[in-house]
Length: 352
View (cartoon, rainbow, N blue to C red):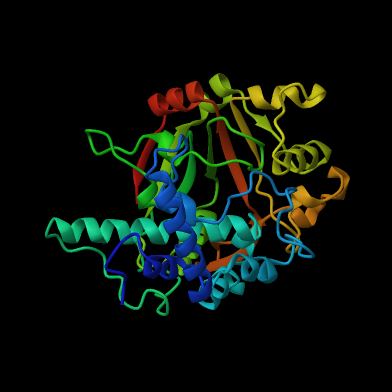
């Protein structure tokens, strides 16, 4: 039974905490709420307070005495995460997506989305509208794959096709019901940006975006998601954006390792120019195991095992049937507000 009051111990349990941890957090929140009534300078919001602290960088180790961030299950137990959520995050079907971030990232992301879904349902009920069905939210999981969709037509000649999936709770629409590109921007640290700044990551393969979408649906059953298909003129990319193509090698390893440690490139000597690039194209990173790239001692320890791969289908021209193969997952990273504003004027994108 979903919670009936948004700010409640039931909501904290619904988000994915154990009952014991939820009661501990609720008791502490009541004390904070009472102290805030006196007009303290800093005011906590309920969601901000109950979410686990989202680390800024992978090399921050505040996992508790004797516990390493690399121990995903131990980390989540220490945070008070319930068995149900731990099993969804650790689902082996989505290991390639999971290892692109940390355990703490996925806990924070999932709990926040569960709260936002519950909040929307309650707001709709208050207006007399029918909200999303959240019955048996904590124990029932829909199929990982969505209903079959008609294939998109091949991109026209002279265009590059890119993909992005995102929770519907993290986007808004303009007066024309168009999704501004800034809504699709990413958090830091990420592969090519260590801290702050506006940057938009798009995938070259639809399958990568689909895997992220399905992992979100696994962790937050019933959560609405969107899939964006973007077409960009090749001449605009080549002549105007002049991309930095960063294949796997020493530069890629050092940039990803530095970024995943939460370090900016400003004043970083030979890497200082990375921050000023309008567009970077290169492989998607992943951890080889539960040990994040940012926790490696030196960028030289980054290896080909830290490059993400994805299964894609293609049609066999002579035999007339579809085959599957693994290819390197690739990303296009647009950096800076001005770049993204300019991209908005030159690219075409739609929900599919």
